[in-house]
Amino acid sequence: MALTFDDGPSESTPELLEILSNHGVSATFFQCGANVRRLPEITREVARRGHEVGNHSDTHPKFYFRRTEFITNELTRAQATIAETTGLAPALYRAPFGIRWPGMRIAQARLRLLGVMWTVIGRDWKLDAARIVQRIARHAANGAIICLHDGRELEARPSVKPTMEAVRRLIPMLQSAGYRFETVSQLICPTN
Image (cartoon, rainbow, N blue to C red; front, side):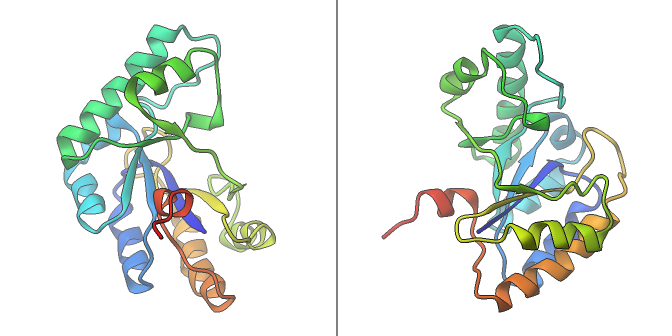
């Protein structure tokens, strides 16, 4: 299964990186360009530690009723920011709020981005750690893509304590059940 984190990087991302490292877990981080520009060193650390960095738009807008040009600009700016910061252009994209809108396919094709959704979203911006764990555990399965958040849109210093506590509980619980964690690219394009 794949652990994914949206809306970062944030000031809490280094703590999350330590939790993942302590358990030998790789994850995929869908990052906002504006947050990457605000915290470039944290983004570089995510990549340096071998985690995958994906595109999550530049400013985390809702794409309802937006023109193709607006969508393309959002994805292009985030793509350029992440590539300049990490030296690697993202191959994956996750739409903010999971909103798919006409024009997004064109933007993704121009940037050669594969769209990625989730099989379970933790609702970690709203629930406490115990309920996040319960929600994700109910949907644990081979090939699952778990969506959590290491940021809160473009908020500086967001409170993500429930997410951190949930991740501390989830990883050992799921590992003891026999699950292995991979990046999204490893999960969907395994090498033989």
